[in-house]
Amino acid sequence: MKFKIKRFDGEKTWFDNFEIKHKPHMSVLEALFQIQDEQDTSLAFRYSCRGAVCGSCAMFINKKQRLACRTQVSEIAGEKVLAILPYGPVAKPVIKTGDDIIVEPLPNLPVIKDLIVDMDPFFRHYEAVKPGFEPEHQESKEASMSQDDVKKVDRYAACILCALCYGACPVSARDRDYLGPAALANAWRFYGDTRYHAKEEMLKRVNSKTGVWACDEVYRCVEVCPKQVPPTNAITGFMRKIILHEMKHIFG
Amino acid sequence: MEKERAYGTGMWAWLLQRVTGLLLVFYLLLHILWAHGIKTPFSFMFIEFKTAVLIMLLLVLPHALNGFRVFAIDLGIGEKTQKLLFWALVLTGVLVIIWGVP
Image (cartoon, each protein chain N blue to C red):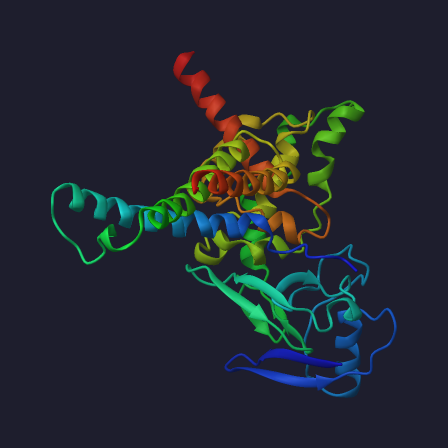
């Protein structure tokens, strides 16, 4: 089984080829461990839980954004991929054939070394929408939610902040100021929460040309999400809420 | 084996919308020039009427039908329904083309 891994040492970029010994039920992350253990100790990649909970091992595997720990080597070996390149302003179809497994760092974020990207821009956008309960609105007694209310936000609360959606988003590729799918999905998670009261402020934070209105609505974030969070639904939901809010403002 | 989860209908619909949109703008320009009696090397005179109709349908249908899909997305049909709608509209488009070109 051949692996082709994109390397970066701070100055230059190149591809290295590795031959791995395939074991049954081996994940891409395990293959990276094997390469690091037996062939090249300088190979750098980020991981933590190994069970698709922490979201640390988000990578661009075979031209698709995936978690290395959750991707089985046997499933993607010899895979043919017809995708649209996520880099830059122009959409360009890319075709991947052949047996080798290509592992690259997550797109749309600056690379630090090999497969490790700088998550700062991603978390800056996340923090910008203030996805949390406002302390001044904190209720003194226990605040209960009905099961139906929980259901409305539950899907969005599943986000593990792995940034796969950010790496797949064509808007994030061309506009680094765009808040991105994860930040907006998390904003919606709080906006829809019955215990959250600063709703108008939240609408203001996402109502901008680098906020919800920048979205292309192409569902790439939804397609790559390992936790089935639908950020596009959150974004179109915000769009409707903003329009209704403005209408109320105009017509009293 | 998990089948194709990435890069589905949405992105291709987006690309098709842009490409057909650009071609329609180009067509509109040719049409206005033709209406003013200005001849261009792209004049439709040299192709058969039936072929011209087919080309028009191939440009207009994907653009118009996907326009409806985008409206529906903005109205909040959700991520699963939009995919279903995409294929339903593809089927509609194909049927209209078969019906439209005798």
